[in-house]
Image (tube, rainbow, N blue to C red; front, side, top):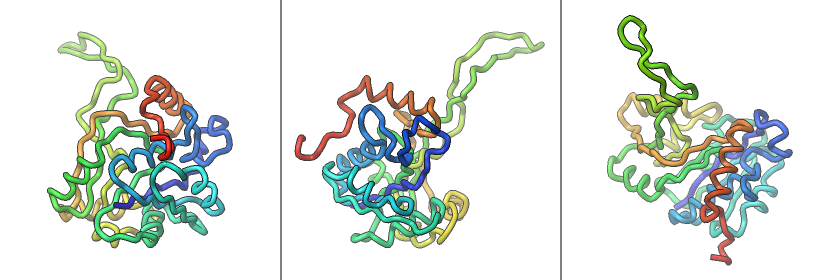
Length: 236
């Protein structure tokens, strides 16, 4: 089993909190973000991880992510290709056929990747997307007849699901990725219209590290759960 990590993000919204690192290498509780992803993939049986990164960063990613139990193959885009184009470009470096995992390089989750793969194989689609429940960033006011307020709920869960940036992609999905651009605006809508795109519901940890607030939340989570931090393969 192989995997692709999309790691071309520049951490612009993180500002000084990124400490000059590419987004996927921003330190969280003493470890680069992508280390958590590689360690999670290794636990799921992945032996080879292809990292799609920006020009000039391949050696940095290979150095930072080595020793976790998987071969790291970093491939740098000569120019930005977008997320879909980055996936397509990285997929050229596969050594195996069949389904593979693909992760956005700024996502932290505790998704059961083995269960995700099993679900993908069971329904036989071209791709499976991990979806997470949408939680309101605001507290809500509950109203009754006559605009009478009956209560308040802080950051309630909404009746919607959102793309959590973790996928299993089969050969058909990979072949239909764009040369440039975003697969979430082309490949995925097309597959959905054809009934070939499925969801895997995840109700656990999901943090997209975009802002200093997101980074703080991730730091707090892994500081209080040291058992979830990556360890070198030789120390396991």
